[in-house]
Length: 244
Image 1 (cartoon, rainbow, N blue to C red):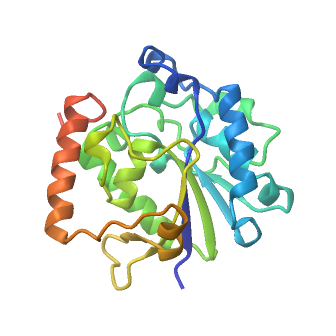
Image 2: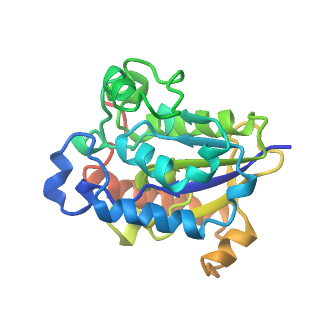
């Protein structure tokens, strides 16, 4: 049986304070962000069932994972850095650090960097910041997660990337960048019979937890919403709509 995926947006980082800080390279969490992690840890209801931790290799997502999911790490749950779930834009704040820098910085932490290639932070080739490439990476990440043997997986990633990963753009067009709050979490299962795209569907328990009562969108409505939201993200400079 395919695993249940618990998606988490990272806690507040320095670049979340002001748009001027978006020019900071791979910024860390703020002290308030660290407190958000501790609060997330206290309210997260699935600690005992989690058997794999995954995060983007950016500082803020790794720091969120290490603080918020200490209960899992303390009992030896594996933690993998997955570059496919890095943030979408090529702004400095969304560009990761060199692999050698991360290995040195987190050398005393149980982070498995074996899936992170040396060019993961290049924002070129596979990692380019355009919508087609991001959708391919997210599909690859979903398939990788679906094929895992674990039953419950936490994935700590980024607000923009989460819309691509879930293929859910509801609310994104009204907000700047994302509908996901810092340290928000939602739970998903894979849609049955969808082996090509490995699409995710939010669980009813998760919807109830966050008081989500809106009517599910039709396929046509989802397509229209995606086109509107991705156009807005292109205009705001998060990602380009097509390859250049």
